[in-house]
Length: 179
Image (cartoon, rainbow, N blue to C red; front, side, top):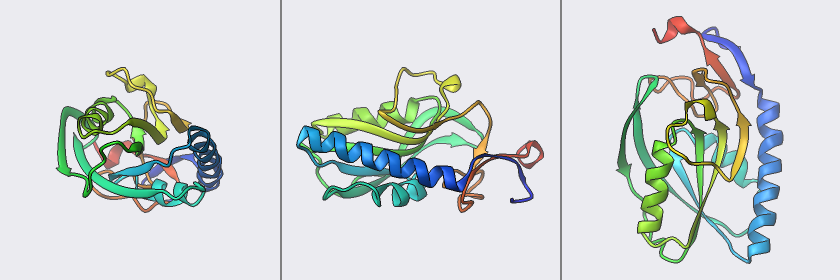
């Protein structure tokens, strides 16, 4: 375990198992709809989750990326900025947004609204983590890996000042690292 991690909240093994379960469920749901989603990953945090999840989605998916920002340090600032937009039209497409964590809900609300403004037929959300105790916007992910308590987490894509993204698990950062 990394010396700056207080405790592991979600192990590497649990993440892999849950990715397989989510991928199977997503495959079944979209097959039943007769649709194939365009998978949109929200950079940078969702990339490890995306890479592991898509191995288990048995559909001819396409994927694209967006970069958005709403954090300074450990806090959501409430101002969602689009840093990098999609490279393609999504008019008439079914979008599966891949997110690392649903926290306040502000980012996903704005990104979901943007997808519909761009002409998406539907938008569903799959998130590795859900932190409902921090929600300030009424939004719910369609697929959730793990519900976690209100602790500052890093690893498996989640960062603090761009560090710790490469940890193979989700852990709680020691308080002295960010205070």
